[in-house]
Image (tube, rainbow, N blue to C red; front, side, top):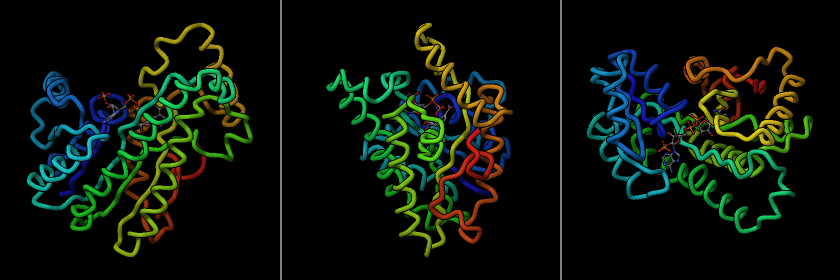
Length: 273
Ligand SMILES: NC(=O)c1ccc[n+]([C@@H]2O[C@H](COP(=O)([O-])OP(=O)(O)OC[C@H]3O[C@@H](n4cnc5c(N)ncnc54)[C@H](OP(=O)(O)O)[C@@H]3O)[C@@H](O)[C@H]2O)c1
């Protein structure tokens, strides 16, 4: 009867995580969101999810420390005080750095500073407070797995080999978070807690729906490099495909197999697409 806490389940990959994990009525699935009312409405209007009593929606912005502490207390009441899986999925994906290279972003220094700070607040500091809030529950759980949804764009080898310039600030926040995962692993591996950074692949969640023709050209350039890297790449996968693959990696990953503190993909290795 495993229990899951997943952040950022209002949409995209997070919503698909609650859909798939709640499929088994024996599993307890707790989704953290910023707007509880909106997500409860979405779940109640979803013919698949409506009526699944094992889904719990809890309010918490990951940048609000007190809200995270309250969410952990609420989770303990639902589960009886333990937690098996914590999935840090919530993430800020910025548009400011999505198309222009980092040197060009320097033409707007204030915007650069503001964006990078926001990215660190959500993608790094928020997750550290999330981990600290939920670790007492994880330590009492059976599975003891803490998964962070990272990004292949945080891989320096890939960036260097293909000169990937897009998403420089976002990628920086994800790379920092990969180190946070390694540091938590260094501390808690001896307690049997697996910390893992997991890239979901490139997933269609509507991030490119409002792009201009000029921005699309930059996206096209990145996609061409992706094809060079992975000739089988045909474009983004669906949230369903990504979560199905990640679930399999999450189920099989273990400290014993050497996954503690690692950064791998939905394919279970360093192949990002
Ligand atoms: N899609 C991809 O191709 C891709 C690739 C690599 C990595 N990722 C990572 O996958 C994860 C999920 O992203 P996605 O693709 O599903 O994007 P998304 O559709 O933009 O979803 C992002 C989620 O994070 C939540 N969130 C943002 N800021 C938050 C905050 N301060 N507190 C709590 N929740 C917050 C959002 O909630 P609201 O609805 O309240 O804004 C939303 O539920 C992210 O960590 C992202 O970096 C995605």
